[in-house]
Length: 173
Length: 173
DNA sequence: GGAAACATACCAAACGGTATGGCATGGTGG
DNA sequence: CCACCATGCCATACCGTTTGGTATGTTTCC
Image (cartoon, rainbow over all chains, first blue to last red; front, side, top):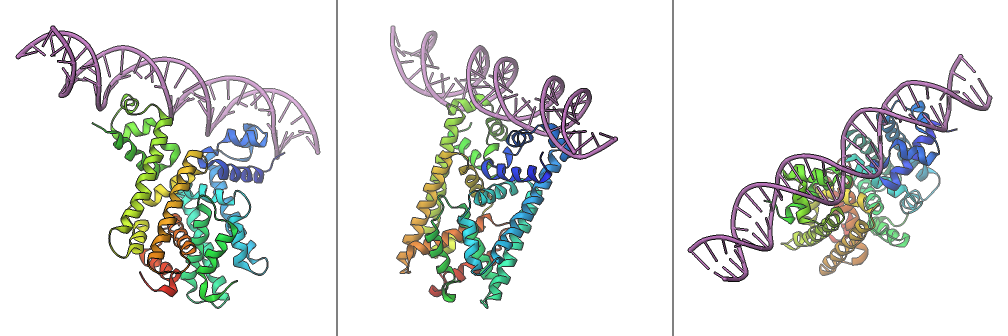
């Protein structure tokens, strides 16, 4: 028995592994072990599903982005781990950005996601008493995004070096 | 009358605008105003074309990356312009990175491209007498990559601010 | 010099396979 | 009864590939 949430989570997984064009009803059905009848019970059609999927992505990966960082000290450290860390988060980002280049709706979502994340980093930096929080937030975010796209990925140590060089005058966090 | 080079340039354009899955023989033929017979005159088949396309990309967008920077003073400035500047260069980067996630050959190409660019930035920084050239090269490159993926793009001024903040202790270039 | 053979670049059409979204019907368990 | 799902089918579109043919040079060789 599958819930709507299951369909959406599986969609994000397919997105991360194979990109937006691979997110089809048949692929989802096969991976979930269900059939099309089930899909059409939960969603009006493919267009509605895609919209719901983007909504799901926006909620999970901005809210979660912030929530992970907020859950404890060394917030920036946690964000770095989130980028290098668990498997397909980076792949998902890559896939969505490629999707955003072709689909206006996906682009709108990506735009909100980027803006909200940068805003959060800005308040985070301001909270620490850093200077130029807006620009510094952009710098940190560009590093995060870049690190998620580099081939091959930087090692954790290399990324830490880069990060420390970027925040040089302020020391570690 | 089309040359093999025309097919490859058009392929890069399709790649930048619509992503790797859209690079099909039919799409290329329509855009070039030619037919499939012409395609099969120049290439053995789709597999051979894709390999040639990746090769074409690697040559143009690493060699060109370096050549643009080397052609005059203020080399890092020129690289920034290359990112924000002319149209679909950023879109091409996004598309190829998405492609690299699914195709091993594309991934190998992307890996070489990233490595060569970082190596070049490293020598550039070393030439200026900067400290920690390897790490600084990675920092600069992550900013470039991140900037090319952000939605919406940073303005030229915003990007310049970020860049100046990153190289803070060394002043402008 | 001139005909024959070849090379280059392209066109038109069709084929075979596959994937896809969509839907209609029928079943099952709570 | 109804949410939930299985099965089966359709119509379509797409895509790589093959084949055969056209038109224009270009070389070869008697």
